[in-house]
Image (cartoon, rainbow, N blue to C red; front, side, top):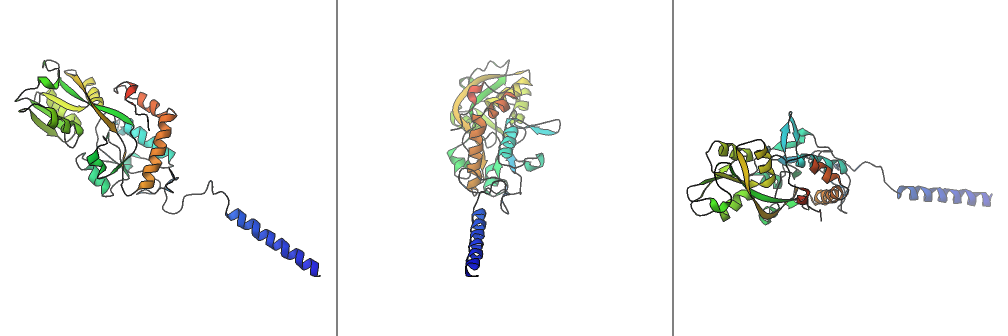
Length: 285
Protein backbone atom coordinates (compact mmCIF):
# COMPACT_ATOMS: atom_id res chain seq x y z
CA UNK A 1 0.00 0.00 0.00
CA UNK A 2 2.81 2.44 0.89
CA UNK A 3 4.57 2.07 -2.54
CA UNK A 4 1.21 2.59 -4.37
CA UNK A 5 0.70 5.90 -2.58
CA UNK A 6 4.20 7.05 -3.55
CA UNK A 7 3.53 6.16 -7.20
CA UNK A 8 0.24 8.08 -7.25
CA UNK A 9 1.92 11.08 -5.61
CA UNK A 10 4.75 11.03 -8.16
CA UNK A 11 2.34 10.96 -11.09
CA UNK A 12 0.45 13.92 -9.65
CA UNK A 13 3.66 15.93 -9.25
CA UNK A 14 4.71 15.09 -12.83
CA UNK A 15 1.31 16.19 -14.19
CA UNK A 16 1.48 19.52 -12.35
CA UNK A 17 4.98 20.13 -13.73
CA UNK A 18 3.82 19.46 -17.30
CA UNK A 19 0.93 21.89 -16.89
CA UNK A 20 3.31 24.56 -15.61
CA UNK A 21 5.60 24.06 -18.60
CA UNK A 22 2.67 24.34 -21.00
CA UNK A 23 1.61 27.61 -19.37
CA UNK A 24 5.10 29.05 -19.95
CA UNK A 25 5.36 27.93 -23.58
CA UNK A 26 5.04 29.86 -26.85
CA UNK A 27 2.08 32.23 -27.24
CA UNK A 28 2.33 32.32 -31.04
CA UNK A 29 -1.09 32.69 -32.60
CA UNK A 30 -2.69 34.24 -29.52
CA UNK A 31 -4.71 37.43 -29.98
CA UNK A 32 -3.24 40.64 -28.56
CA UNK A 33 -4.30 41.51 -25.06
CA UNK A 34 -7.27 43.79 -24.52
CA UNK A 35 -6.62 47.24 -26.01
CA UNK A 36 -3.89 46.02 -28.37
CA UNK A 37 -4.39 46.48 -32.07
CA UNK A 38 -1.46 44.66 -33.59
CA UNK A 39 1.79 42.86 -33.04
CA UNK A 40 4.69 44.48 -31.24
CA UNK A 41 7.54 46.11 -33.11
CA UNK A 42 11.15 46.93 -32.34
CA UNK A 43 11.00 45.45 -28.87
CA UNK A 44 8.49 48.07 -27.74
CA UNK A 45 5.79 45.63 -26.72
CA UNK A 46 2.24 45.36 -28.05
CA UNK A 47 1.02 48.37 -30.01
CA UNK A 48 -2.24 50.18 -29.36
CA UNK A 49 -4.18 52.50 -31.64
CA UNK A 50 -7.03 54.97 -31.19
CA UNK A 51 -9.54 52.59 -32.79
CA UNK A 52 -9.02 48.91 -32.09
CA UNK A 53 -7.78 47.10 -35.19
CA UNK A 54 -7.43 50.30 -37.25
CA UNK A 55 -4.70 52.86 -37.99
CA UNK A 56 -6.21 56.36 -37.98
CA UNK A 57 -4.52 58.90 -40.22
CA UNK A 58 -4.47 62.65 -40.70
CA UNK A 59 -3.70 63.87 -44.21
CA UNK A 60 -3.99 66.92 -46.46
CA UNK A 61 -5.90 66.04 -49.63
CA UNK A 62 -5.42 66.64 -52.52
CA UNK A 63 -1.65 66.56 -52.83
CA UNK A 64 -0.91 64.37 -55.86
CA UNK A 65 0.84 62.04 -56.40
CA UNK A 66 0.99 61.32 -52.66
CA UNK A 67 -2.68 61.62 -51.77
CA UNK A 68 -5.66 62.35 -53.98
CA UNK A 69 -9.12 61.06 -54.85
CA UNK A 70 -9.68 58.87 -57.89
CA UNK A 71 -13.17 57.64 -58.70
CA UNK A 72 -14.33 58.57 -55.23
CA UNK A 73 -11.56 56.51 -53.58
CA UNK A 74 -8.38 57.71 -51.93
CA UNK A 75 -5.17 56.91 -53.82
CA UNK A 76 -1.53 57.94 -53.93
CA UNK A 77 1.88 56.78 -52.80
CA UNK A 78 1.25 57.80 -49.18
CA UNK A 79 -2.12 56.06 -49.08
CA UNK A 80 -0.73 52.83 -50.53
CA UNK A 81 2.28 52.95 -48.23
CA UNK A 82 0.11 53.50 -45.14
CA UNK A 83 -2.06 50.54 -46.07
CA UNK A 84 0.98 48.31 -46.60
CA UNK A 85 2.41 49.32 -43.22
CA UNK A 86 -0.95 48.69 -41.54
CA UNK A 87 -1.23 45.26 -43.14
CA UNK A 88 2.17 44.28 -41.75
CA UNK A 89 1.06 45.43 -38.31
CA UNK A 90 -2.18 43.44 -38.62
CA UNK A 91 -4.21 46.66 -38.77
CA UNK A 92 -6.75 48.05 -41.23
CA UNK A 93 -6.83 51.40 -43.04
CA UNK A 94 -10.22 52.16 -44.58
CA UNK A 95 -10.96 55.47 -46.29
CA UNK A 96 -13.06 56.33 -43.24
CA UNK A 97 -9.91 56.05 -41.09
CA UNK A 98 -8.28 58.92 -43.04
CA UNK A 99 -9.22 62.48 -42.07
CA UNK A 100 -8.65 65.29 -44.56
CA UNK A 101 -7.44 68.34 -42.63
CA UNK A 102 -5.43 71.54 -42.98
CA UNK A 103 -1.68 71.06 -43.23
CA UNK A 104 -1.21 74.20 -41.12
CA UNK A 105 -2.60 72.49 -37.98
CA UNK A 106 -2.08 68.82 -38.82
CA UNK A 107 0.88 68.25 -36.48
CA UNK A 108 -0.70 69.99 -33.49
CA UNK A 109 -3.78 67.83 -34.03
CA UNK A 110 -1.59 64.71 -34.01
CA UNK A 111 0.18 65.86 -30.84
CA UNK A 112 -3.25 66.42 -29.30
CA UNK A 113 -4.21 62.78 -29.88
CA UNK A 114 -6.61 63.16 -32.80
CA UNK A 115 -4.93 60.49 -34.98
CA UNK A 116 -2.37 57.72 -34.67
CA UNK A 117 -0.23 59.10 -37.49
CA UNK A 118 0.02 61.82 -40.12
CA UNK A 119 0.81 60.63 -43.65
CA UNK A 120 0.92 63.72 -45.84
CA UNK A 121 4.21 64.07 -47.76
CA UNK A 122 5.58 65.52 -44.54
CA UNK A 123 9.16 66.78 -44.46
CA UNK A 124 11.04 65.92 -41.27
CA UNK A 125 12.14 69.20 -39.68
CA UNK A 126 13.61 70.07 -36.26
CA UNK A 127 10.63 72.32 -35.55
CA UNK A 128 8.10 69.57 -36.24
CA UNK A 129 10.15 67.06 -34.24
CA UNK A 130 9.61 69.23 -31.17
CA UNK A 131 5.90 68.47 -31.46
CA UNK A 132 5.65 64.93 -32.89
CA UNK A 133 7.80 61.89 -33.59
CA UNK A 134 8.87 60.92 -37.11
CA UNK A 135 9.58 57.57 -38.69
CA UNK A 136 12.72 56.86 -40.65
CA UNK A 137 12.69 58.69 -44.03
CA UNK A 138 10.83 57.05 -46.90
CA UNK A 139 11.27 59.70 -49.60
CA UNK A 140 14.02 62.18 -50.55
CA UNK A 141 12.30 65.39 -51.61
CA UNK A 142 13.20 68.71 -53.19
CA UNK A 143 11.43 71.95 -54.03
CA UNK A 144 10.61 73.34 -57.48
CA UNK A 145 9.68 76.52 -59.30
CA UNK A 146 6.69 76.32 -61.66
CA UNK A 147 5.76 79.13 -64.10
CA UNK A 148 3.71 79.80 -67.21
CA UNK A 149 5.52 78.59 -70.34
CA UNK A 150 5.46 82.08 -71.82
CA UNK A 151 6.83 83.85 -68.73
CA UNK A 152 10.53 83.75 -69.54
CA UNK A 153 11.27 82.89 -65.89
CA UNK A 154 13.90 80.14 -65.60
CA UNK A 155 15.05 80.28 -61.96
CA UNK A 156 14.17 82.06 -58.73
CA UNK A 157 16.88 84.61 -59.61
CA UNK A 158 14.64 85.85 -62.44
CA UNK A 159 11.94 86.86 -59.97
CA UNK A 160 11.95 90.59 -59.30
CA UNK A 161 10.31 93.09 -57.01
CA UNK A 162 6.57 93.16 -57.62
CA UNK A 163 6.36 89.52 -58.78
CA UNK A 164 3.98 87.27 -56.83
CA UNK A 165 4.87 83.69 -55.83
CA UNK A 166 2.30 81.18 -54.64
CA UNK A 167 3.04 78.75 -51.80
CA UNK A 168 1.01 76.45 -49.57
CA UNK A 169 0.41 77.33 -45.93
CA UNK A 170 2.52 75.47 -43.39
CA UNK A 171 4.92 73.92 -45.92
CA UNK A 172 8.68 73.89 -46.30
CA UNK A 173 8.11 75.43 -49.75
CA UNK A 174 6.72 78.50 -47.98
CA UNK A 175 9.72 78.49 -45.63
CA UNK A 176 12.10 78.29 -48.59
CA UNK A 177 10.38 81.15 -50.42
CA UNK A 178 10.51 83.39 -47.36
CA UNK A 179 14.22 82.67 -46.87
CA UNK A 180 15.49 82.84 -50.45
CA UNK A 181 13.39 85.12 -52.66
CA UNK A 182 14.60 88.60 -53.50
CA UNK A 183 13.39 91.58 -51.54
CA UNK A 184 10.14 92.93 -52.93
CA UNK A 185 8.86 89.59 -54.26
CA UNK A 186 5.39 89.07 -52.79
CA UNK A 187 4.60 85.66 -51.28
CA UNK A 188 0.96 84.60 -51.42
CA UNK A 189 -0.16 81.63 -49.32
CA UNK A 190 -2.89 79.16 -50.30
CA UNK A 191 -4.67 76.60 -48.07
CA UNK A 192 -4.09 73.70 -50.51
CA UNK A 193 -1.33 72.95 -53.01
CA UNK A 194 -3.45 72.87 -56.21
CA UNK A 195 -4.89 76.33 -55.45
CA UNK A 196 -1.57 77.97 -56.24
CA UNK A 197 -1.33 76.30 -59.65
CA UNK A 198 -4.88 77.35 -60.51
CA UNK A 199 -3.95 80.94 -59.66
CA UNK A 200 -0.81 80.62 -61.78
CA UNK A 201 -2.87 79.49 -64.76
CA UNK A 202 -5.16 82.50 -64.25
CA UNK A 203 -2.21 84.91 -64.11
CA UNK A 204 -2.90 85.85 -60.49
CA UNK A 205 0.60 84.77 -59.42
CA UNK A 206 3.82 84.68 -61.44
CA UNK A 207 5.24 81.43 -60.07
CA UNK A 208 4.65 78.65 -57.56
CA UNK A 209 7.19 77.10 -55.20
CA UNK A 210 6.21 73.65 -53.96
CA UNK A 211 7.50 70.08 -53.70
CA UNK A 212 8.80 68.73 -57.02
CA UNK A 213 6.56 65.60 -57.27
CA UNK A 214 3.40 67.63 -56.79
CA UNK A 215 4.62 70.20 -59.32
CA UNK A 216 5.21 67.42 -61.86
CA UNK A 217 1.71 66.03 -61.26
CA UNK A 218 0.12 69.47 -61.66
CA UNK A 219 2.12 70.40 -64.79
CA UNK A 220 1.11 67.11 -66.44
CA UNK A 221 -2.52 68.22 -66.30
CA UNK A 222 -2.02 71.94 -66.98
CA UNK A 223 -0.54 72.41 -70.49
CA UNK A 224 0.21 76.10 -70.03
CA UNK A 225 2.58 75.50 -67.12
CA UNK A 226 6.16 74.24 -66.93
CA UNK A 227 8.46 73.17 -64.11
CA UNK A 228 11.28 75.68 -64.64
CA UNK A 229 13.69 74.79 -61.81
CA UNK A 230 14.35 71.91 -59.46
CA UNK A 231 15.68 73.14 -56.14
CA UNK A 232 17.66 70.63 -54.09
CA UNK A 233 16.86 71.30 -50.44
CA UNK A 234 17.89 67.93 -48.99
CA UNK A 235 14.45 67.24 -47.53
CA UNK A 236 13.16 63.84 -46.40
CA UNK A 237 9.56 62.74 -45.92
CA UNK A 238 8.61 60.72 -42.87
CA UNK A 239 5.46 59.44 -41.21
CA UNK A 240 4.59 61.58 -38.19
CA UNK A 241 3.51 59.54 -35.16
CA UNK A 242 1.61 60.40 -32.00
CA UNK A 243 4.43 61.36 -29.59
CA UNK A 244 2.75 59.44 -26.76
CA UNK A 245 2.86 56.14 -28.69
CA UNK A 246 6.49 55.04 -28.90
CA UNK A 247 5.68 51.32 -29.52
CA UNK A 248 3.73 52.35 -32.62
CA UNK A 249 6.68 54.41 -33.88
CA UNK A 250 9.02 51.45 -33.42
CA UNK A 251 6.61 49.09 -35.17
CA UNK A 252 6.20 51.48 -38.11
CA UNK A 253 9.97 51.84 -38.48
CA UNK A 254 10.37 48.07 -38.50
CA UNK A 255 7.63 47.69 -41.12
CA UNK A 256 9.05 50.51 -43.27
CA UNK A 257 12.51 48.95 -43.32
CA UNK A 258 10.99 45.67 -44.46
CA UNK A 259 8.86 47.33 -47.13
CA UNK A 260 11.87 49.14 -48.59
CA UNK A 261 14.18 46.14 -48.33
CA UNK A 262 11.87 43.52 -49.87
CA UNK A 263 10.88 45.65 -52.87
CA UNK A 264 7.28 46.42 -51.88
CA UNK A 265 8.09 50.15 -51.73
CA UNK A 266 9.53 50.13 -55.26
CA UNK A 267 6.34 48.51 -56.56
CA UNK A 268 4.18 51.18 -54.90
CA UNK A 269 6.48 53.93 -56.24
CA UNK A 270 6.21 52.56 -59.79
CA UNK A 271 2.40 52.96 -59.77
CA UNK A 272 2.70 56.75 -59.94
CA UNK A 273 4.30 57.91 -63.18
CA UNK A 274 4.55 61.55 -62.11
CA UNK A 275 7.23 60.80 -59.54
CA UNK A 276 10.90 61.56 -60.21
CA UNK A 277 13.25 58.65 -60.99
CA UNK A 278 13.80 56.01 -58.31
CA UNK A 279 16.85 57.80 -56.97
CA UNK A 280 14.42 59.78 -54.82
CA UNK A 281 13.52 56.66 -52.84
CA UNK A 282 14.98 56.74 -49.35
CA UNK A 283 17.04 53.76 -48.23
CA UNK A 284 15.14 53.26 -45.00
CA UNK A 285 18.08 53.46 -42.65
